[in-house]
Amino acid sequence: MGLFNKPFLNNSKNQNNSKPKGKVIAFINQKGGVGKTTMAFNTAYALSEKGHKVLCLDLDPQANLSLLFGVDTAESGDYSIHHLLINSVRELRALHVPLLCGELIVKDQKVHLLPAGQELSGFELSVAGINSPRQLVLKKFLEKNALLEQYDYIVVDCPPTLGLLVVNILCASDGVMVPFRPDEFSRKGLGHFYEALEDIGEMGVSDPPVVLAHIPNLVDARRKQEADDLAKITGELKEAFGNEKMVPPFFNRAQLVKGQAKKKSVFAFSGKDYKGLQEQFSQMATIVEEEWSHEH
Image 1 (cartoon, helix red, strand yellow):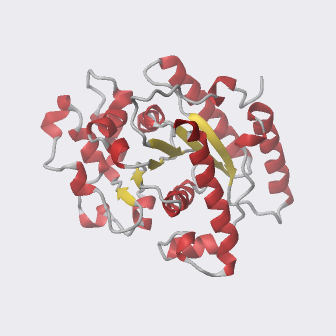
Image 2 (cartoon, helix red, strand yellow):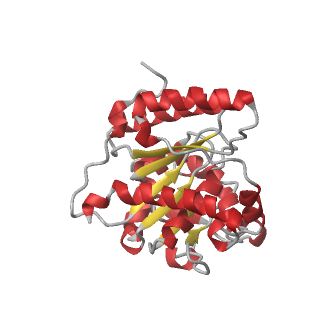
Image 3 (cartoon, helix red, strand yellow):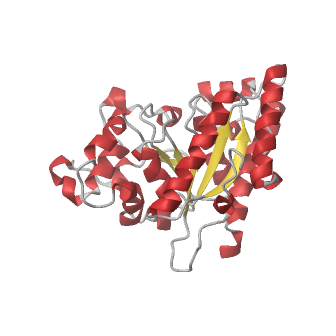
């Protein structure tokens, strides 16, 4: 059996008409430095460009996605999504703060945001003693606040770990996008990620999300070792999932760095040098749309 050979994960969750229309899409890899934040940010804007209402959840304590939106809860001392998650657990009433979900959502751009804070690094400790399922805190938070009725897509930027916070994200997600760098560390990170997905399925508390795409990211085509590693990883992934789960590589382009520095998506630029990236991210949005097109 290959490293990524988890065939049951290819199937979408069983959907029924009573479920809300919104879908949760997580950008995830246990390995850091693979470009999850940039991918999540630009894909969220690509979905918005197609007319969808999109909310981003920053669930990484490093809060890089929040910084792209110009929000720094560490500097401002403001509340973060961590406080909302704790507020949603009755057993943690002693830790509740006077905060409503609608008050925290940042709405000054096309895409809305629930910002992260450093407090998220203590999430696992905060919920350690509760009797209700610790894996479902995020899922129940989304349900209680009817966020899947208000938004077409909720895009989640995940921390580079496989702890309880990521388990919560996997249990709440309908689909996952998996960015990776073409190196051996990323390959091993992907293996650990699929083991975690298998664990979600075996726990039985929630259906595992469907894998929407594997995204070779920050690829430097000039390096032979990188090209060899990319060929090796993509070969293994294609063997396990088929070609439809693999997207063309995102190369390490200056335009992405420039957009990040200006805290803007690639769609905010009109130059010809951004056209290729805009098309690539639009294709990512199409992959998300088409996964559940049969429901509409």
